[in-house]
Image (cartoon, rainbow, N blue to C red; front, side):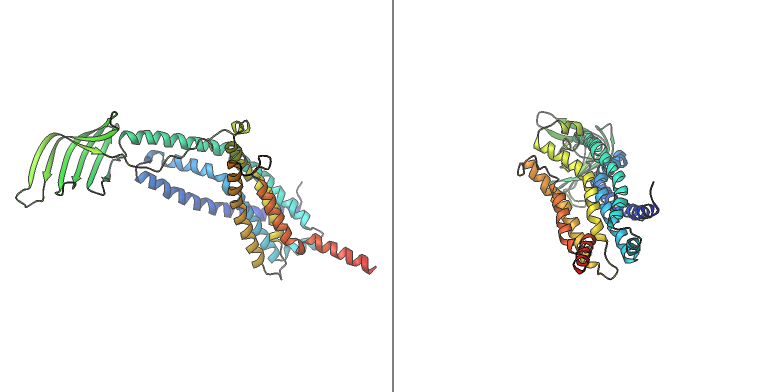
Length: 369
């Protein structure tokens, strides 16, 4: 049964955590939305899968947002309680740092389990679904060489411009407009109907206009010509898209990573475990960083907290890269950086710690007596 102090502490941290997590989610969703719209704009993604695609990206990235949101919320809640002298009141009632560690771990435990679920189960599934969607979209795009209906397509530095109003069944084209400046003069080609063709032998894409009209030259000049044609073909260069990066390792089921001896798989497995473990490590760091005296300037602690946050998540990438390349022994793994950061923070803050002051007081009393 949780005590009154535990419930109060959990409530304060929870309110700040939800606010910070919501803010981080809004930032991430905005960035993902802009990136997704850019891919839709260039034809790498169709509009009918945008919402589903974004939802999968959010599901994939949620596990990486929970540890920093927890760390910031714990710091903010503790700093507010220290500023309002609530921590001093707790200490006067006999509730020292040990009680705060216990209360924060009450919050950290279910959050770590939630992070583990996202990281070990949901995130690989979302990565696999993203890989599947991108593969299907890439195959569909290759069939039409990156041309989208209702959008202008340009190649050869704008010398050739193509517009298709409607695409039916990925092959039949409706209301086609072509402007060709490659020979110096302006050539306009119009047709109500056309076809897309892919030559498997050469790998070239062609757009063929049927029963259309061609206008050569500049209107008003004597060499201006108008002609009709039955078939008019133009070669289209397939557009380069954002590469579909390999989702195979990040989409691998966790139990397969457990059975693998490959260093890259080991690094991926420990990357997934880093989030849940980081929840407990950051909880141990947040208490000494956030518990300051009301008369003590908080700028130094905040600077140390910022350096801790920056070092923690950057050392994670470095440690995982060292493990993957074999720079560190396998038995060390890639989670050693959490112990290093924890030890450094406590080494810096030990002279001001509650336990050291209590030990000094006991020693001074014994000497006096």
